[in-house]
Amino acid sequence: MKNLFYTPEKRDDYNNQMHSLGRLFTWIALAMIVLVPVAYALAAGKQPDWALLANCLPFIAGYWAIGLIEAVSYAPLLGTGGQYLSFITGNIANLKLPCAINSQNVLKVEQGSEKQEIVTTISIAVSSIVTTIIILIGLIPLLIFQNEIVSVLKPISPYVMPSIFGGLTMVVIAKYYKIAIIPFLGCIVVCVLGYSLGFGSSLSVATMIIIGMVISGISTTLLYRAQKKKKASLESAKVMSPTDTPNEEK
Amino acid sequence: MKESYVIIYIIGAIIAAMIIGMSVVFLVKAIKRAKAIGMDKKSITETVKNSAIFSIVPSIPIVVGIGIMMPYLGLAIPWIRLTVIGALQYEVSAAFAAGAMSNTATTSQIVTAIIVMTLSIISGPLFNAIFYKKFQNKLASIQEKNKHKMDSITGALLAGMLAGIISALIVGGAFGVGAPITDTSGITTYGEITLITLSTSVIIMLICGAIMILGKQKWIESYALPISILGSLLVALAFVPVFAA
Image 1 (tube, each protein chain N blue to C red):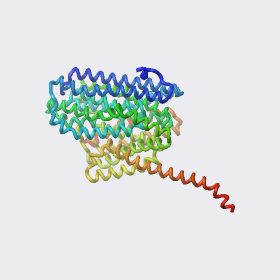
Image 2: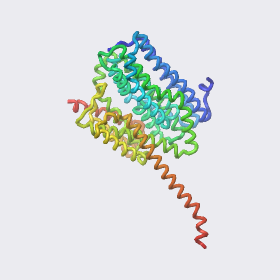
Image 3: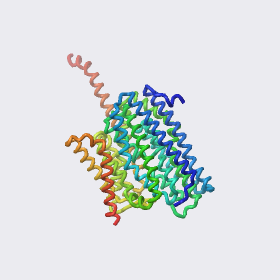
Image 4: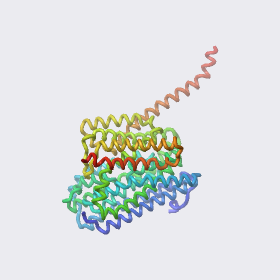
């Protein structure tokens, strides 16, 4: 327990403390989340429709796969504290990550630095608090004016993602255009083919994030290897040159 | 509206309190660490302020999401589901799969839908609770051995995420021109408005950039993204009646 309360001096200790806290809160959150259907069934005095539940198993399996892919692929972007917080509070791609990227950009933090990790954690923590409070405040007018609120705001809900990512892309494009161009063109091709062949509805933003990350991972690996090879050949040429010189003199 | 039980509201309140508590603990720990590594107070305050302002507008559709699900699941369940992990599209799909997004759904179907919603989203947190520390240590060792490699991985993931999102929005928008799509929650998406919103957001951001650089107004940097989000959403709101007519 002591590990949770002291103020660490080293980065590793801070990281370990975040892991201890993150795991503790995650287990508590999981227990509370799982309690909801149990409590609802007991309060309503009804059992689930077991046959229907069995029919939904492929759906559940699909979301398990997506959840695991997201947990692995978002990890390097969210940092330790951000990862635990984001996977409890949700809305990662449309709120938490853009919020953290915006803060990193405003403060111009170095990629991979501890400062970046800390700024990300602060951003996601503040964002989680603000969202939870807005939801809580929103419940009261929602109870009274549900129809009015939904009828006014429902039509613009699909446009929140373009409103965030139009501006955000402009902010980060200068930094990432070299590595983003290949995945971007790849994703465009996948999307155009998908829509042309009639399965465009399957290519949601969530699906395209995973496809984009896979294409980007492959293209960046190839670029990284090519750069490494080029660097190695340049270095070997430099090493060769002093021995070459006497030969040339001969 | 379907019935919500007092016990569910109590659990919801505990979950909301726990999320705020966890966020405050992480915030305090991160701020203490920031001070320990020499980050100035101004940077910390700016991060807190920027994040708070940024989060306001994108949080409003979450409240709307609760409103959309309320007639079928009551108030308490959508509130809990959209406070933790969930996102509207996941929750509606799960409820739809269990047949609960209907006015004639039985209580048994609703119980089933809540189980499906719950089980569907727990793989991410379970991964974090069991494997994340080991996984993160592996990432840290890559970072230590080869910073360039780790930076490439991080950059690739971020670039891939942006590429995926932008291409889905552009191509989805282009193919949606003249062919609006209504999803299971009853929300209609017009391709034209998607493209208009995306373009407006880009234009507002460029204008903010120009004001910042040419007008030497550094302060606008912190507000540029919230301004472009709000401005483009207002444009979207203005165009909805045009295309819905």
